[in-house]
Length: 261
Image (cartoon, rainbow, N blue to C red; front, side, top):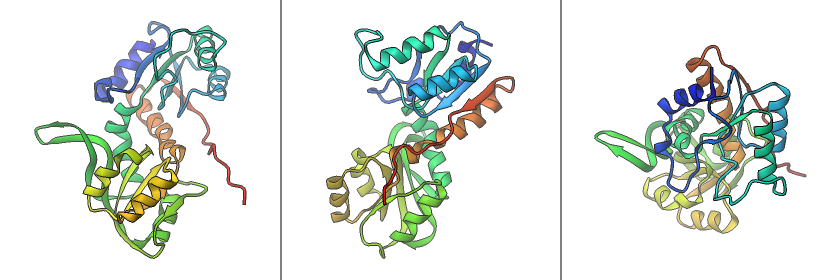
């Protein structure tokens, strides 16, 4: 098969039109007419990811985060992004990113599945037609009420994380929470409207976190990587179901942040 055949299958279910206007999802490098029999999945197109894809003989790299985000005026080996693009093209590897279109059509429900949320609602609606609503994040009820400390451990265990950070009263009872994978501090207005007691996301800075607590929302910062690496396992299953003849490999999970006790 060709790269364009894989892209067509992906975009049947995850159209790029569902991506945010500021985003850069889609086919970003290579020639869509190249043969592609093996795909390599990762969260980011790092040097290590590209080397691993080359080593395993992959013809296409699919990541969640786009390597090319803002406008690039040149692609040269003088720039680390340019070097990565050149390396992929030199090895005839096509590069594709599924970012906010996947956040809307896949990641939001997937993260709610991991946390076993019931009575779900879309946190930030970005698409609405008739009775269908899609968007970033989810709100829902936990399987059972628990303290913030217990909820932090629950999130840590469900997402298989080495640690999480919590802000708020450890003994506060949490029954309903919101989750936005990746970086979610920009959605605090939506969180406050949804009657939740806690918010799970990543990249929460100190001031945003204490301000949330002051407004009655406990914070569970599970990390950007920690809330989004689930993309890889999910897309491995998706691609295998969509294209049974396609070989799929993925980057091993490796939490990028280390805590020194």
